[in-house]
Length: 420
Image (tube, rainbow, N blue to C red; front, side):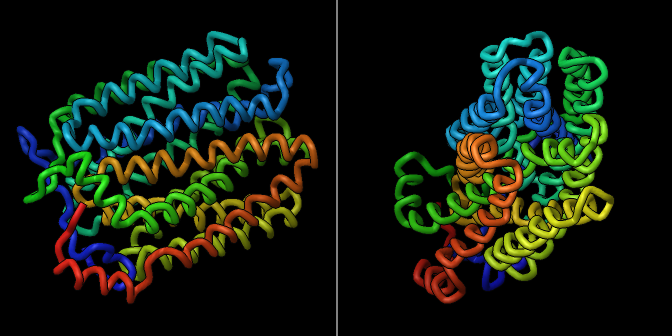
C-alpha cells in the first residue's frame, strides 16, 4: 500500500496475511464480503420498518427508536471485545456461525408483535453482526496484502449492498403480508452460509506476519500512546454514525408525509443506500491516494451540503438523486476509518476494527433515541436538519486528528517500526 503523508500513523505497517489449508482461492474475498452482505441485510431489516409499523403495533416513535438503539448499542459495545479475542484466535470458522446467528434472531422477529420480544430479538441478532464485522475485516486485510484501502472498500461494499437491499425488500413485503414475512427470510441465510462453507471460508486464518498478537498489557500501552487520536477518531465516527442512523430512520417518514405509500417509500431509500456503495469504493481509492483525514473531512462537508439540498428539493426524482449522492459522499469515509484504526493498532487489528465498526457506531445508536424524541417534540423537519449539522461537527473534529508533521515525527521517533 502506498504510504503517504496522511496515512502513515505509526511507520510502515504490514498487512496481515492468511495462512490456510488449503491456500485460499480468489473467491475468498467474494464470499467473506457476501457474508458481510447478509449480516448487514438482516440487521437493516428493522430500522426502516420500525417507524412505519410502530403505530400498528401500538408504540411511539421514541419507543421504536429505542429498539434500534438497544440493538445498535449492544452490537457496538461488544465488537471491540470480540475484536480482542479475534486477535488471538483469528479463525474464519466463526464467520459462518455469526451469519447464521444474525439470520435466526432477526427472522424470528416476524413471529411476534410484542414490543419487548422484538427488542430482545433485535439485540440478539445484533450480536451476530458484532462478531462478523471485526472478524471479517481482519480476514479481508489478510487476504489483501496490497492496496488495503481498496480491498477494505470491497468488503465494505458487500455490507453496504445488503444494507441497501433490506428496505427495498422488507418495506413492500411487510406492507403486503405483515411483519410475519420476516420469518420467511431465514432460508436465505442458510443458502449463503452453505456456499461460504463450500468456498472454504471456515479454514481461513489471519495472522500478522513477524508480529505476535499484542496481549492486554500491550494493547493498553498502545492505547495510552495513541489515546488522544483514538478518542477523537471514535468521536468523529460516532457523530457521523448518529447522522446516518437518524437519516435512515426518518427518511421513510419524510416521504410518507410527502404523500408516498409504504411501498413507494422503499425506492428512494434503496437508491440512497445502493449508491452509497459506490462511495465506499471511491473512498478507499481516495484515501490511498490523498490520505485518511482529508477523505473524512471532504466526505463530511460534501454530505452535509447534499443533505441540506435534499431537504429543499421536494418530493420528485431530483430529491432521490440528491439523497443518493449524499449517501455516496457519506459512505466514502466508512472504510477509511477502519484502515485508520488498524494502522494505529497493527498488532490488534481486530480490536481496532471492532472500535470503528462497533464502539463508535454505538454512539450513533444512542444518539438515535435523542433524534426520535426530538422528532416527536419539535417536528420531523428540524430532526432531519440535525444530520447535516452533525456532519459539520464531525468535519470540525477532524482538526484534532494527527496531521502530517506530527505523524512524520512519530514515524521517525519510533524508527519506522509498527507498534501495537
